[in-house]
Length: 229
Length: 124
Image 1: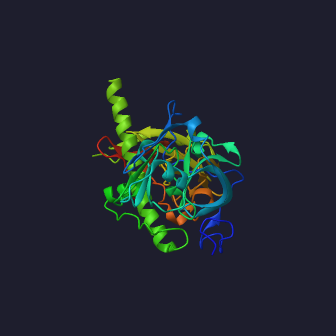
Image 2: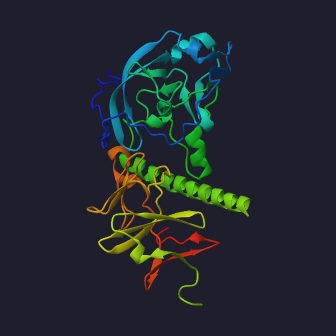
């Protein structure tokens, strides 16, 4: 049976989605990127026998794979056929040797962005797209690619992977809970989503997000005003 | 209390040019004034997708729309209604842009605002 996120999946575009109306790679950079990291390392920690700490040069020398995968944003657009090159999470698991009680992995990027997955889920730590090193906005040095999941699960600018035995809320779960909204159903994906619920949920989220931006903007303005007086 | 107390002078109607949006900052909030078919509109130029400043986005006089320069969501500047979401997705997931209340006192555009509450939106 065809797998979600791959080109032989039928239907290839989830119901209600549109193809992104752009010629170039549509990049949603809602949470970054920050300044280019000078001393970036890829690290694993948590319940592992062999914690890793790799430089970029060491990371790109690991065994790699290349996969053609589709991207579906929760906003309702798709971009088909990204060709990613990177390290299979399975390779990292073999190297870092999680203990038997590990059931989940918590991937962490810049500025507290994160997403949690079952440890057996197919994941790719990509550092090239169509054979070219990623641009900073696209996730350089390394980004996660989670086939069949919504795009927001694919953490850009990955820095650490934590191996855990209990489910841990990730970035968006914590945001939603902080706004008094329910966390995201871990089984939610583009192929089982109720579109009306998705839209209503997103609308709620955007209302809170815009209000946060507004508050931050006014606070920054007041701070500058005070400093100038 | 006079009718114009608690209002903030932005600019003169005659200063505004059709098709050339002008941005102001009032108590830390951005206000974008646009002149469309002779009528003035005041919106908050903040994309309701991720907070991007859309004051320098593509403004279409023909359709009365403003396009976010980052992910290309499109809004009707007259009502703030989102017509399209990021990268061509449906617009109905986005909240509308804030539309601000103002009055025109002879030629002067006076925005409703005060120090305590900032700019007063028409719809919240």
